[in-house]
Length: 399
Ligand SMILES: O=C(O)CCC(=O)C(=O)O
Image (tube, rainbow, N blue to C red):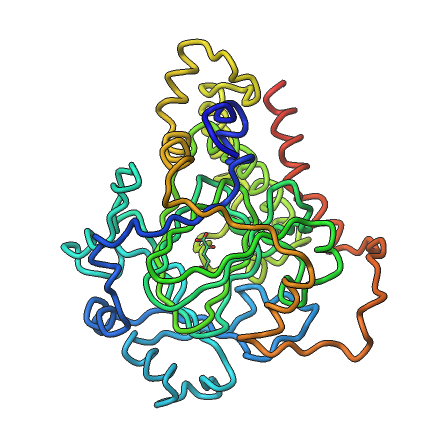
């Protein structure tokens, strides 16, 4: 896909026709491109960071969501010593577990004068380390499959390698809102075991190497895994119109979630993601629902009709960081599209490690997807499904 012809309407908004791509050779000027574990130890000092752990043997069929992982606080120096097998954290040993210092905002963790080590201006974005999160993981560490509700994402690999599996928003990856987070929607599929449900999806796979920057279009599902000791940073950048709509749908989800918790149908403590630090209360959420409705009123409703935008709409589109970014790199020689991968190659890649996959004893060759029984959990997943929230928001906007 080339040229400006496609850069209108929903394709611009969602990255739909463009798909994920890697930019190579664009961060050589970043001081952060020379970051090593030693650099990070000196930047982070003695502060203690929450580390997430998981087993190096994976039980196929079971998604290990973040709230189910053991966590403990450690300094980065202790974490890297643990990764080298020079110390243990109780039962947690580097030969049986992976460890992940995940999703840490740089403005919270490194000295302010070093935030400029990360510099997104070369990408046409007004952002540096202040807007970025860092991810430091040992081989096998992963983030379960999810999509981000807001914005588009740039993820820069600084040290080691990371494998990304991406799926377009139109693929049905069995969304669940439990664990609940305002900014991510998780998949109920255990991607590591390459379940049969993936045969009707469109997996795109790439292994990022130091210096690579991955563009993740809005709402693309992703499963991300460190292949060896890995350091990366990312920034989520806004997509104005889409984000306003999503804020409303997220407020609807939050309201329903709060109602279900209040009535004892969901246990809030075990259902919340670690990033949700506050209790979700109906009263606060109603206020939020009203505040975001005002935002949506200000945005253009119809994302599809952009072939001849009226002047006001044109102005808003040219202001949009996302369309500017995609236009800038569409024909760039630095750009490498991320390719679709067939099921056999996907399965082989996942079986080659870094985790040891424990499959149930029955061979899975003749497994065909069966209609899922409607359990209480599944009913809740359906009730809170993003499609339902989108319909609910549309009804609210009409009334
Ligand atoms: O690197 C990871 O483990 C997850 C990153 C991620 O989900 C993101 O950048 O949106």
